[in-house]
Length: 150
Image 1: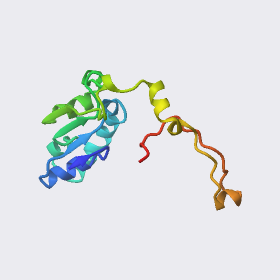
Image 2: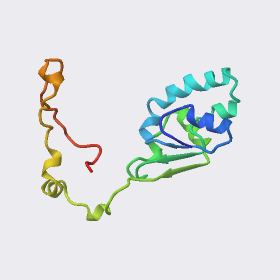
Image 3: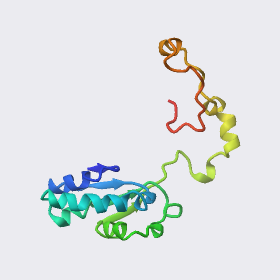
Image 4: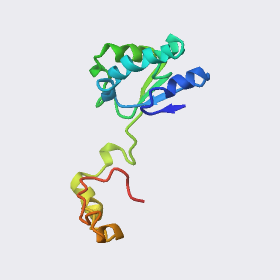
């Protein structure tokens, strides 16, 4: 099972005997993870989850979607996060996923020249709701597109 921010996912997988992997960046271990551990683990134990299973809320493997150079484990300093990380079988930096080697990627200026329309604000929408006055029909500034257009 692959888990992304669902703290009970890996515990559910463990109770069913299914290996689980979390995908999360290391910033999660500063906030909100320590608070989640303090709240969730005792509640899972109260509900009858075996303590060793309740404490392994990260599952078996942690995948960090970045390079260790840019998102190192050395910045994690909370006791709760450290204990959870020690319970893992494996920790891997698995990213980032790029179409080209970073050395071959274009500069920001070159990327803008190649794709001029992708970095401009959206145009006003002429919708029924906007004409009725319920939703303003105005451009929404877009700083960058998170999901590439196909």
